[in-house]
Length: 99
Image 1 (cartoon, rainbow, N blue to C red):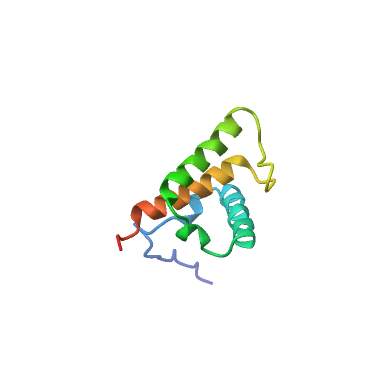
Image 2: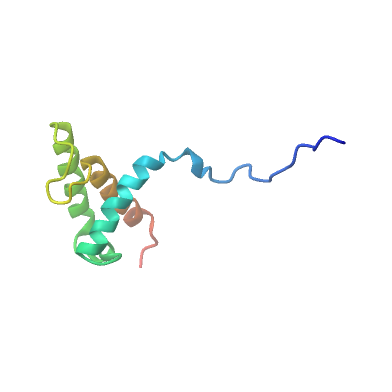
């Protein structure tokens, strides 16, 4: 019986999704799910003055966490996950094509 040869996979230079810490991503997704239920899916894209407001929100969550509060009192989610969610929104606003 012959041994199997090592296979090839042309994935060099492609995104390595396995690098993401999925436990952290899941925490951010919990925030997103709760926001979608409270408001509606993709509501965050239409918030007036969103860049300033999500920056402020991210800083409130970071400050609360830094001062020792782990969970958001409204949602019960981790403050860093809330801040991460806000930062994802800010990145989206920053990278989207200008309309």
